[in-house]
Amino acid sequence: MESIGSRIKSRRKIIEASQKDLAKRIGVSQASITYWESDTNEPAGGNLLALANAFGVTPQWLLTGRGDAPALPNVSPAPSFKANRNGGSWVPQLQ
Image (cartoon, rainbow, N blue to C red):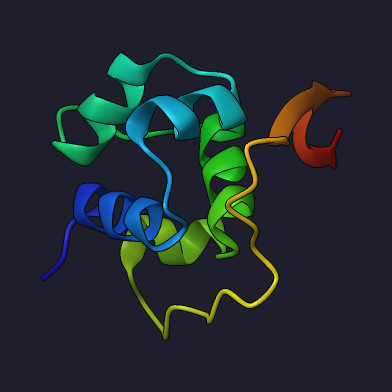
């Protein structure tokens, strides 16, 4: 069974983002991305939602891998896409 770290890494590669790019988009350190991809830690709360938004998947799929991974027609690898904290939840914003 594929781990959450494997799903994060494969989706990051699909959107053609480096660990540094993804970290900047969702407002975490590059080390966090490294820990998540190596299954040292798991993202939770706002970080999980920010990852799901960046990848165009549901948090449930990201955590469990259950169901089909959705296609990514509306997810842009543009570096201007990032998630900001807004009222306690993460929401994607275009600059």
